[in-house]
Image (cartoon, rainbow, N blue to C red; front, top):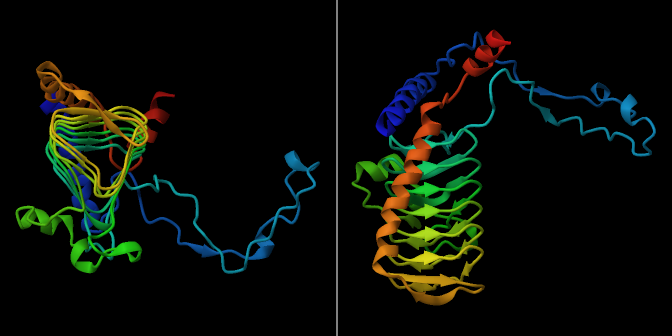
Length: 290
């Protein structure tokens, strides 16, 4: 069931991605969308609408050069976003899942049967990020990094090569943020320029700052802040603000990391089985059943 769901999603996504790269419109969308237009002040009402007539706040007139996008017949959000004229492109394995409301941007690799869940943002706009296999990035998480040694000015071009190039090179590029295999990152976490070595559990609302390392088979309690440069040894539980060692993990707790990750992957597969990556298919289906 798990592989069937992921395979179905991969097949649909591959077909749509190929069409988009060839410049063909998605299925179900005839013709082209109307072009962007530059608004004029006269096109905006000078007074508040009727529902707000009693308000003392007048509707401001926008500058004459404001660019106004027309209403779209298709969703404007893209879960996979390339940068720099498609030279910095995310690489997502066909059997991985990126939720429609998530954003994977730029130089990012997402490996086998991993999932980036609803509302999560993985930003490879300043540096190369890598997510391992059987890993879950929970709802509304934010993952990002600056390029090594680049400071606030952002990464050099050499650190922002396409994730596809990294895969072609055998992933020889050193990622500025690395999340290993069998990792469960709970919702609302913020990870910046850190390393999770694998088989980890990161509690909800946790912040992990640049340069921190979470050793294999270690966990971080919810709501913690792992300070920059902190090294969490393997097999330990940490928590607090700032996070400190709480205790050692026993054998059963260590074994649970892989098992829990696989259960999360099954949940993601249920989402993937229903995934329609682009177009108006679901709108048309809803109209037909109304």
